Length: 177
Image (cartoon, rainbow, N blue to C red):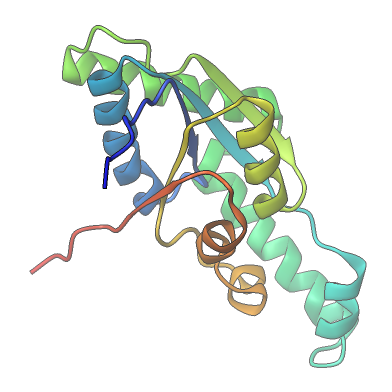
């Protein structure tokens, strides 16, 4: 069997800004340095769908669900961008993250050739952006933010793995002893 030559020119690094995703970034950078590839950083802000809300309302009252949504939104906002709400701020956070990583590694490559912030279904958006940008590989963490939506709807990473036509590199956080 003759093995094909692996060429990686475009890497899609999908992040939800969790610890797992931040750890996966080191692997995306390593691949980019090795292959001389470009990295696109993608963050998707999930939107709740009507069918999901209708199924949730079978378990809790509308008032309770509204309280849960507000609480999760506030927690996400504080963990991502403090009290600032605009996508521009998330973009700045990601840009600063990439710049800090470059400084720490003394690498010669640009870590963030492009930063994309999108809204919608994270799985669909990751797959869409990988195709649009002609990415050769998707790099992402194995576990993201733990929200009620994530628990009920299942793992984004697993769904990307199942549906992607591109190779997906899934990085686990190391176990702490």
